[in-house]
Structure formats: structure tokens, C-alpha cells
Length: 90
Image 1 (cartoon, helix red, strand yellow):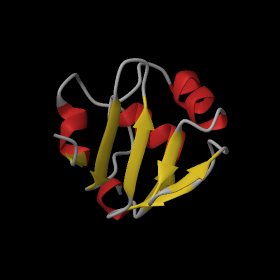
Image 2 (tube, one colour; image 1 turned 60 degrees about the vertical axis):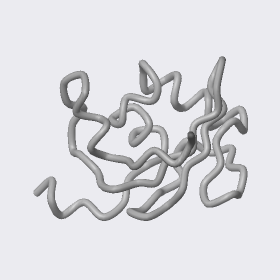
Image 3 (tube, rainbow, N blue to C red; image 1 turned 30 degrees about the horizontal axis):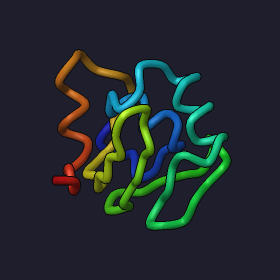
Image 4 (cartoon, rainbow, N blue to C red; image 1 turned 90 degrees about the vertical axis):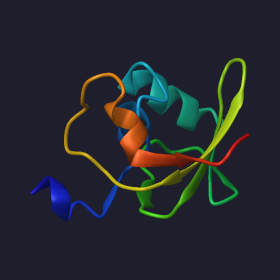
């Protein structure tokens, strides 16, 4: 069934991709307007994302731009999150 996922909530995806430490931190980040999907600022952690979407995340000390490659049903071990995205920032 994990292969059948074609979209996911942005807060959950950020957490699974290990761009943030906790899901509540991901929800707070998106709720505060620090996340963009395809260039558009969002303020709802429940916003759905799909494969190919470009996500811009303003983190504490950096800005990351990534392209979604896929989804996962559960959060995997450290390092496994990198398979979910392609890094677009230098």
C-alpha cells in the first residue's frame, strides 16, 4: 500500500522527509507561513502535496528548496528521508 500514496499532508511529508524533527514543529512551521509550495506561501499544515511539487522551507539558519520525489506511510530511520526529495538548493 505505501507505493500507492500519490499525495500527503505537507506537515506529515516534512516530518517523514526529516526536514524537521517533529510533526508538531512541521505544523507550526507551515502554520506560520515559512513554507511555500510551488512558490505560493501556505499557512495550513493540512495542505496536500504531490510528487513533483517544489517545497521551499525557511528554517532557523537556512532556506531549503526541494522537489518531492515520493511519499512514505511511516517515518523511516535516519537517512531514509533523503530518498523522498531532490535537493534544489546549492
